[in-house]
Image (cartoon, helix red, strand yellow):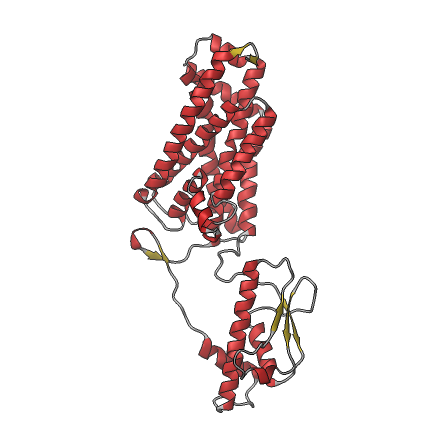
Length: 391
């Protein structure tokens, strides 16, 4: 009965704090939807590339064919400072037959991301290879100059295009179609939002201390473990609600917004185990942070700072695949990384309970360790509290 009363008290505090509810539900939802839009092309099969400005000083057949081959891959546009510029020299046709000759010149705006540079270079290289093949076919009368440019381009594309079957290797050696971008973007920001539970946990604990509630609870003779459980269990339920609500909203809202749908794979037991382990990890770490801070400013700085640092090194903000090897090894110490790996094992690799068991075990072990440290600090804080001041 005492624990139930503590749970009801915590729920009332939460329902009165609209800012906390916004942090726990609206902010993660905004993160998930916005980042799903922002990263929709990152893992797409046909990523978007910017329009480039083609500046050709030559007007021969080879230059015209090169421009057509390039336009079939990347849109061409008028010159502008923010666009990639491609310069074709006047002696382009003569350079085609020279080994190691500089055929074209690419000029990128300084702020151009590496992935865009790579896409543009790949398209230019393919177009140059097609132009060389076009020249060879013409010189050997396998193409006729009387054919239209569209016919010549179609014949060359037919010779250079290959159909490559692409599949993903999932758990237990199963092959299936490539996962869509939403499968990669939604889990990361859902986990990031769940870990923000530490901020309202710290704020409610500070309110209890400042209002004298914590002193009265101590005087009532309640065991420290009961008080700690009364603090963590409501937020544990909140985390489970976050997990379910954000998944359901992503499942139904993303297709309605024109984004790739979130396809849920795996058994209900696997999803339940993953949700319970992530929620336990968030609450255990949140209780640890709440037991450390002594002011709202400290709560904001420590909870927000820890959340951002764990996300930065855990593959939430930057995918681990693009990190250096040393950073990938460092990512293994972040509980967000374990949660994300478990999520992707279900969503992307279509794993089973056995596949996510190592991640679930790590999350639960971290939760127990964080809760144990928090319990010691919280018990010490209770033993020293007098009225509303810690001595």
